[in-house]
Length: 157
Image 1 (cartoon, one colour):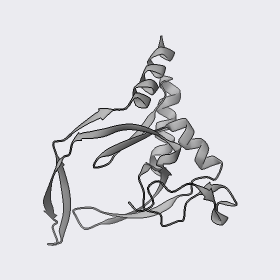
Image 2: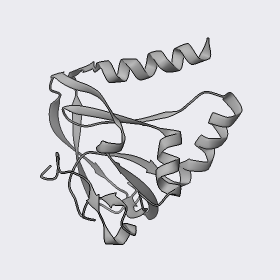
Image 3: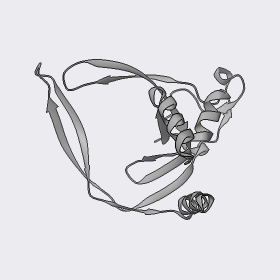
Image 4: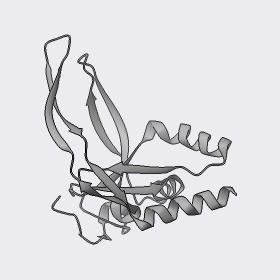
């Protein structure tokens, strides 16, 4: 990920708000537009703060849902359209938000890397959809992540 460690800078496309170039390659925490309302409704109904976690091969990051919503509303994060292909051959376009790891908190680091194996799905039209399957591996939670969990647990008491 060549842009890992790059500092956020004012961006013209964000009306001067800090960010990175549009095609930056770095760890992000992803939220689909279609999930925003259901997650907000659940959080409001249950009065339990939601955090979104994204685990990569060797590191993981998290962000509070409320912070993600605020970053979207304030224009720091813009939607990206992504095309998903189902095993049946159908394609779907979805809007999603990719939050730079800078906005989140570190969750953990790999202690033992997972084993990567090649797998594939053959759909009803004979299309072959290859993918990588992660198996095994272990991760330790960082103190920052444990602090977030403890803070949330204490807020419920």
